[in-house]
Image 1: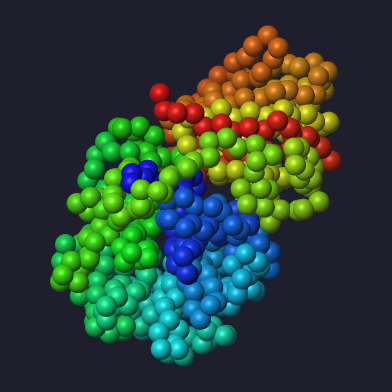
Image 2: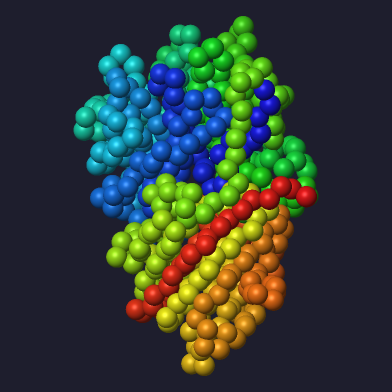
Length: 499
C-alpha cells in the first residue's frame, strides 16, 4: 500500500504516540494556542482523526500573554495500567508537568508538576516504577538527557536527576523517549535543532540508567543532505509497534515552499516512517535513513485507504476540535453557531502578545481558496493569515468616518502597512477571498461583477525562516475595536490539487 506524507498536515509539531488495544493515540505541541495539546486517534497509522485536546481548562495551562512560540512544548503520551498520561512543558514558565485520564474521550486531570528542568519530557514505566526524563542539566550541573524516578501520584522526585546520555555531538539534544525492546533499553532523541539540520539519533543499554552506547551509524533518520527535496527537518521521533510486529516512527518534518526555496510556512507536520530492526538489535529507519513524501510498503495492508479532507466550512468542522484561540480567550466574545460566527471585538489587536478576539484553523496545504462573508458595525473585522503578532496578512472590513472600507494590510516585522483599500461607502459587508499558492497569497473582494484584486504578498514572509519561532500559518477570523461586533458566514477553505 502506498501512503503519502505528512499523515497529519499543518501546524502539529513534536508528535508522540502510544498504542492501546487496536488503537493508536497521538499528541502534538500547541505553543501559545488554546486548547492545548491536540489529541488524535488512528486504527492504521495512516488516517488520523482528532478526538480532543489534553489541556482544555485555563487551570491546566498558564498562557496569559506568553511569548509567541512559547507555551506548550513537546508532549509525550503513554498508557500505564489503563491510565493515559500526557507530560509536557510550559516553556514560558519553565515548568514540566503531566496530566492523566482514565477515559481518553473525556477531560484530563489538573497538572502534576515535576521538579526537573529542561524541556521535552518523557515518562517510562517499569516494574511498578515511573521514570521521568527531559533534556537540560541534572542536579550535578551535567547537561544532556536527564532522568529521575518519581512518585506518579504526586510528581515528587524519589531519586536525584542524573544525566544518562549526552548525544552524538549535535546541537540542541532534545526529545528523549525510552523503550524496553527485547531486553535492551533504547533511548531515542533529536539533535541538530528543529530546522534543516534536524535528525533522529539513538543509543542503547542493558540498563535503564546506562551507560548508553550510540548507534554506530547515527543519525538514524535525517533529510539534512537532501537538497531540493520538499520534505526537510525530519526529527523528534517516537516509536510504536503495529499488531504484526512491525515498527514505525511518527516524527515531525516540514514541507518547504519550493524545490529551491528554503522557507516553510505551514508549520512542522506529522510524518510516518517505517523502522526495521536488524539481527544485531540496531534499527534503521526510512529509505536509506531518510523520510520520503510517500512510501510504497507491504507493511500497511492493501485494504487501508488513505483519505484526506480537502474542504473545511463552519458546518463540517467542530469548533472544539478544528479551531483554536490565542492564549486565554474570553468566552463572552464568541458566539459559535453551526453556520455562523459572531465575534465581539476588544481593544486588543493582532499585533499584541495577548488574547485578541480571534479564532483560527490551521492552514494544511499550499494551494487553497479561503473565502468568507463578513459584516460589522464598527471597528475592524476580517480574515488573517497569522504567523505571530509581528507577521500576519489581513484582509478586513474597517469602519471609517465616511463609511466602510476593505483593506489589505501586511505586517512583516516592524513594517505594518495598509497597501490597498477599497471604499464600500455605506455598505458594511463584503465577501472576502484569499487565494493561496506555494509562494504567494492574493487578496480579493468577490462582487456580482467579478473579483476586485487587492494585490498579493509572498508566503516566505510568514515562514519560520523570516518570522522565527516554531508555529505555522493559522487562518484566523478576528474582530478588533471596543464594543465592535462582526458576523462571519459562508466560510470555506478549499484545498486544490497541485498544478
